[in-house]
Length: 167
Image (tube, rainbow, N blue to C red; front, side, top):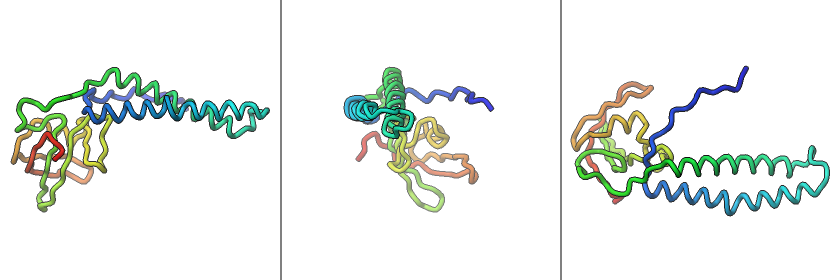
């Protein structure tokens, strides 16, 4: 069987300033901190002779490939991203960067922020703008009903708050 994988659809190119800073910090950590340490370890392991059975050398080279691959990806991605610096003119509607509070039929509330695909983190309440939930929220206003299709069926939420600041 071949190793062909069809091309993946590119995510949106929007990112918050915090998300951009996180990616830049990861790039710095990999390139300026981690890579020199691994390179030094591989250099030392190479001095030990037979490289075919040298675990430090083999795993060090593998880690270098992983670091280099991620660094290439981050450099390309940071070049194409558009940082959204300010909130939209109409803050009464849900757009990129909005903090949205939703209430379901049981009265339980959830708070989400709509962010770019490079910074989503469900545990931190950050939804990718490319996700079905975020796509159904975009453009909605306060007290609007939002219907989201999920594997467990259609879910209904009501928008109870929209904010463009974390507080």
